[in-house]
Image (cartoon, rainbow, N blue to C red; front, side):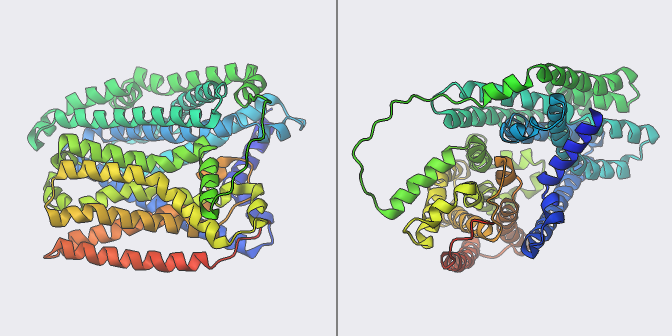
Length: 534
């Protein structure tokens, strides 16, 4: 069975990263797309490395170097839990690929284990991206012994097991509950979003509690033990990791043994009823009492708009992946409204940047709104049914406009609530308050138009799993990078230049972004619909 697991895992990983298609295709454009996607991934990795390295450096600068490894381990586990949770249900319990594999001469347990291996490898890559730069900075300052390297190596290798198990259980529960409801996708979306909000709120409260215990630099240095205990209470494996680095052999055994045992038991139990569970979780229930009522005609744009809404809310993965940024914007603005702008600097542990934070708050608000544009995969989500749009007697421009308006309609409520909460918390003067509305709106429009343009440049209509489009598509990654860069570049320039009038600077940035957005919109609305064969 081991050979079957390795073979299936190899095929799935190649398919996951698009390697298999590139190796066997003769289409030069697909190879160019893969190259651009690889460059985009490298840029994302470099940004992550820079952020994690800077975070570790900041902790050492504040005298908190001793808690860097366990803090990184805690944050890593939380991130892996959220990321695995988004894809566990669709990858682990997918029936589309299972129907094909089960007809092959392979063991059913091999299919299950190969899916876990695929998710484990992706999480392990993420763990390496997070832990290596942070630990490298820690090693530079702390100069630990050889046992630090060995313990950290095993800790990283075993780190994905516990989040993977928990996310799989939660994903199965949500799919099981929603599958019994009339509006299956909508119910799954609400359950998923609710759980994500709980996790995010917990992480914010964790950071808040840690900040509350550390009022100034001297107190921070004197309370490393208190912070260590606090992190240990929040996530015991982090405390095991910390104590293992101090030479505690029992905690080293717990660090590796507990996640491995829980994961092994879960896989063993799941393998016993894997087929029945997959069938039950993907079952649908419908009443066959359809009645033909009066038909009515609507404006083309309105009809296409409603179609986009139905397509969007038919996939819980689509909604949660694209909506998480909008939810983050409301949570961030709400935290500032309740705690004040000063709390943001304390949360970032950079009180020296407090005057500058007030100046770049519109960019801070815009960042989560631009992180993930739903329009970046709206074309690809049509999949093999895209031919239906091609045969409709409508212009391509109308289809594109409907997709843009739908994304704007979904984002608008979150944008308005976030701006109002930010105004309550920041209390800016009238001249600056105008840009709290304009700048995030302009950046939001740019990210939406850019997302659709990226999906037209990098369409993926031939897919077996929504995860391949929603989370791993080239269009999604490129549009995310473009949105983040559009926020970071002018924000960094504002901090570096410190213009005499920030209001004038904001107007210049808004004008430039509007020009770019307008040019991009005119370019994409002149395009014809892409070929369905792609």
